[in-house]
Length: 206
Image (tube, rainbow, N blue to C red; front, side, top):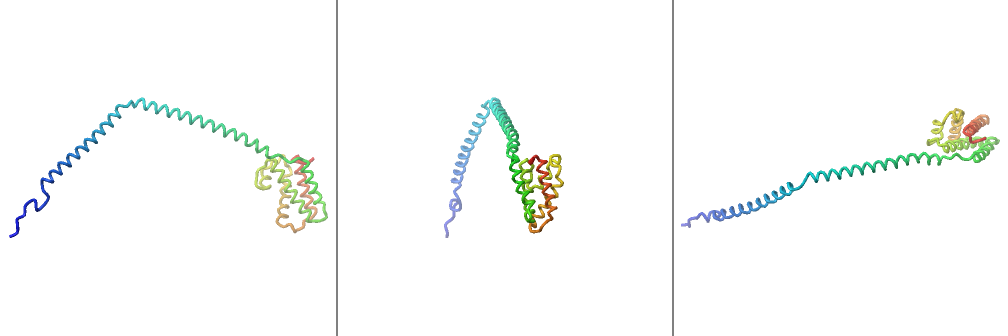
């Protein structure tokens, strides 16, 4: 006959289970007690502090920081305003109109081309006169990428012949796109007189 089984043969010993359970309770109790102890220490530390004094110190620090930020903003704003005031002065200094002698010499060369017997010289005279006016307007401080942009904002009281200049400038554009085409001497002479009148109105020629 086969031997009878006992409780110890069929599973884990109940005594061992009880011992392990007791050990687990002891370990958990020690751990829990340690956690409670540390938590109690944290609470004691927290309540032992004079938070009112700490908050007052923090408030003072924030106020000092705000004052420093206001002072810094004031200084930066003043510097920017100073730079903005200097910018127009520097810009005005950069736009110094060329002396009348330079304009007069350039115009003499343009006039020789305009009085030439060669029609291609007449076209060249128009191109140079337009470029000379563009340089003058730019040096006088008129803004724009092209002479057309500057003519749009030019003071009509200073340049009364602005409409004639627009007509001469249109002739210049035609010549620039088609330099081979010849134009009547009367047409080019009229345009050159318009440029000359503009130079005089801008006080660039005597």
